[in-house]
Length: 615
Image (tube, rainbow, N blue to C red; front, side, top):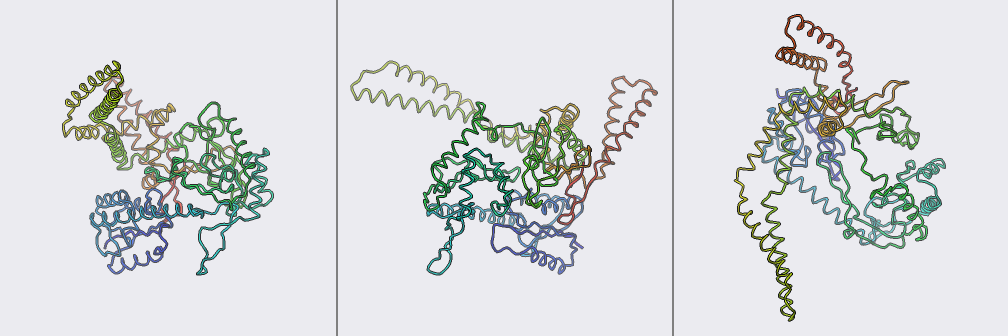
């Protein structure tokens, strides 16, 4: 009897998705008809198929196939599994390696590589077409003076109807009450009140914030250059601005990152009927923003909030257990909850402020997280996986690095362009009857000498066709799993024992590959903060007997140390050997309490999969 895992997904990029319940019902019927055994069902709701790392359901499914023999992965259609070619083949390759077949209810047969390629490519192209049409539609809406995105605070939907009686989409009108509040915010800020005090004042008065939530200083302050926040929204002075930024998905984190577009690409439209704030009040606010910015300039090109702060091992990966907000450095190398520090009201806490006052030093936090890494490295394929990523990274750099031949071709083209320019100047002077300049002739002679040298060097720079493959072979030999293990263990030693910042920076990609989030919780009294780690490492730890693994690691290291000392002549008698073995045994007993702290906690999720562990 074949053992089956079923996967269902509902995304937000289509309006008429088959519901999760319907997909699961179809899958269960399909399994029953064939007499198979449905082991578990995993699902992701309202998550795009272009993501992989951010889908807990698919991550839990992949963890399941790594710890238990499965025969079939089943989904309704291939696009439920993924809409990205790279992600789809990554999963399919691993399943084929583990002798797992991929089936679809729709096809009622095994999915081949060709079918996977065609269907996923079509799905990915459909996503790109939808994105393009959406952006073009938004651009046209802005040119017509219509709203292209969500409704800004201070406006409401217009109820104008067309000849068919349907409401005309994209039209807005001023909401008198909210518009008055916008003017009040501008006036108070221009008079000297800070965004934080403004937010606190409005919350104390019981004024609902945007989307009915509590007011926060960030909603008021926004970002001056990006044009976000109430104080920077140009709609309030009757001007619509669209396409300030473009968003791209980071292939490593799969999170959207914003990039500023050139001003020439912006779409501007004057809509005087949408004006809420006068030019004079707008200018007073801009003047005060510049004054506040100058206070924190210190001669830098970026303001305080935009300065390049140090990137630490766990930067942007820390989360508060109580409010879900970020933990960040506050004070000297000490992390604390940002929401609590700012006294921001949290809607999920019914408007109360976060009560998690627990702080933790950066050194203690990083040390506790790094201490759990070695055990995870005993997962069967961890070093192979890291080696593959390192080779892929180096090969990518090799492909993108311009060769000497390309550089010579570029330099030669530049020289020829300068020669042509000088020749044109000489011809123009001759046509105008002006005397010939010796300096132009000298420059032309110098360029000709340079050109001849470049031509000769270019002729000599003919790399053999297999040179690139040889470089790749050397990279694979250099970054083989054994060498990778030695290098990583050395970095871990330096990072944990010596608190070496350079070693921590080099470990950063590996740590971020294994760990997605570290949740920091409060504990009674002066006890250290509780830590709960989420990510691939949780699944690795959950599938291992940690104490046994750590004991094996310790014994292997002790044996290696013993043999090294015997070979060097340090241990030259049986008595010394027995004494050293006794010291190892005592150290092993002291290690057990530390290893017992690596307790795996199973948290409720899709299929109740191990998703976190506590430190």
